[in-house]
Image (tube, rainbow, N blue to C red; front, side):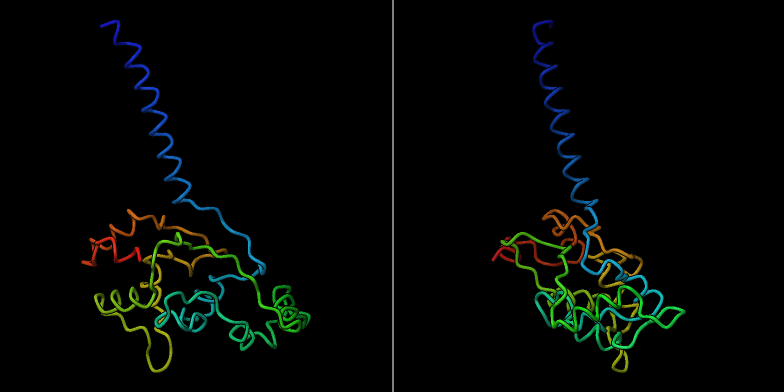
Length: 196
């Protein structure tokens, strides 16, 4: 019995170390750091929650594209070429930066937040179609975006972005997380679905 004590201690030590590693890995994946952006003043909370702008107003190709990504400068410029302004009639600092990008004809190089490994194939189009049909969502109403249904759909993977001043990743986007969602929604779970 005493001869087994060092072996048990060794197993306990490495077992604890392994569990600590898994816990740290989970924490770093699920509590991803906030990434700084070139226009730090930009807030989804201000645009969606306060102004009531639907996701599709800026992310115009979220239904039809594999990776809809960032809206072009022209989308921002449509609303912000003349303001908003402060109490003295001056453009707000973030809008001044936006005008600077526009005047230099330079794209804003936003930093990507939600990323998947290169070997994973993911299509927004496929996911938007499947979930909106399953949940009976109406993504557009009379040419306008249906904000309530779009928020429900987008939050599945992106979290409650409409409540964020600074967007950060809230879902792990790991293979296990994706497989769990596929199982819950009756989607295929064979390897070739996501690994092309």
